[in-house]
Length: 289
Image: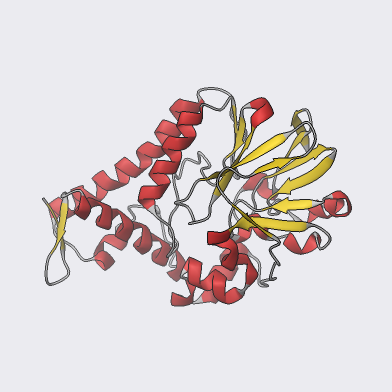
C-alpha cells in the first residue's frame, strides 16, 4: 500500500496488477472504504477495518476477494449487479455461457464463483462522505454497462478502473459491452481534466493525462481502420474477420479469446454500418464502402 494523497492509499495488485489481478484503492478518513477487491488475497489484512466495499464493475479481476469482506457493505452500479450476485447473472452479462466456461476459468485462474450480496446500487452523481474526503460516483459505461469511476473531489483525482491506459487499448469483449459508450466515457474523463488518474491495471498517472487518454481512444480508430482495410482487400464474414488478429495479436488456440475478438469486431462493424462506412450483404459478407 502507498499513500498517494492524505487518506488515499493505492494498493498494487499482485503480478503488477495484470489480469487476473487489479489494483485497488483504500480510503481511511474517519470512515473506511475499499474500491475493488482484485488486488489479491493479501487484502485480508484490511478485512476487519473496512466498513464499505465499492465495486467499479463486475469483472472477476476486480471482485475476486469479495468473500474476505463479509462484515462490509457492498455497492455496485445496478447495471452490473447481476454479474456478482449470481453465476447466471455473470454468464448473462459476459456472454460466457456461449463458450466453454472452463477455458475462461483457466485464464483467470479462479475456479470458484462466490456470490456477493449487494447492499446499495451506485448511481451517477452519488457521493461518499468519509469525513474530510468526498468521493463522487462517475458512471463510465462501455467496458461493462455499469462500469464506474470515482472522483476524489478534494484532490481532483479519478480512479478510472478499466479505462486503464494499457497499451492493449479499450476492452469491450463481453456481450453487454458497448464500444460507442466506451468512447464517450473516455471523452468524459478527458473533460474532467484530473490532476491524478489511477486505473485498475497501470501505474497512477500525473503527467500528460489528456494526451494519454487521447492515445488510448485512438486505438479504437486504428481498429476501425484495420477492419476497413481488411474488407477493402476482400469482403469477409464476421468469422473470417475474427481470425485476422485485429484485436488480439494471438489467440493461442483459446476459444474464449476468439469469442472476445468476435464480439469486439462485431461492435465495430455495427458502428461502421451506422456511420455508412461498411455494409452487410444478404449472404452475410461485410464490405467496405
